[in-house]
Length: 297
Image 1: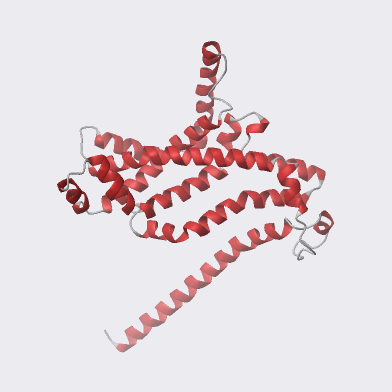
Image 2 (image 1 turned 180 degrees about the vertical axis):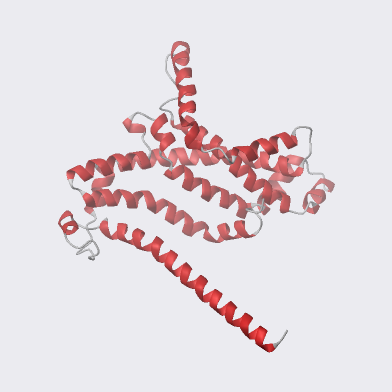
């Protein structure tokens, strides 16, 4: 290769790097500016909203957060979201880890069928099946009312968590099984030689190695469950059982009519903070999980 060609390749490579960095910079600005604007708006007084929207806050009006937490019931909404999200993630991990391990490591008569079934689940949009889920659970409640004296499936945080976990199973099993397939079988064979069974090998050998992938699964599903709106709004009709996204929509409608913009943006910050904190805590593990094969199919 001539020196001219080498120089041209170097120049193209430099241009490509500069272009990539510029695109990343602009994308970061597009993400950071709205988030920063919401944080600044959450500490403004109502009178400040009638001036320039880009003006910095004149002070730290923390009363917005107190009013959003107490008067708008954001505290109880957050508790409901924490309960539902924690239950859903627990159910999802308990079910998906053994299922993904079995599908990735063992061949049995119907293994191909189950793999195809879970792969097909990746292409089903949950929003399209909300109404069938509601009708199915709603039809079962009158029977339970006659049998045990009270309904069970609707207005039940545990049932909502179960629905969340069920709808996230295909993606989670796909992600984890892809990671398990990338692991060498030497570790398991050594455990079998030492007398460990299948369950002990999975728990003591495979799962510690799969921590980055498990953290990736937990973060992705936490974001999905925490911000989910349609299923929660459909299955939970009692005001005291509403989750944060549903409560936030009600708060935004109420505060917009009452011209309490500070409380509205404070509610947005309350919803965003847990996800930002969780991401900062698991950022390193998330990067490892995506690099080591968790997203490699």
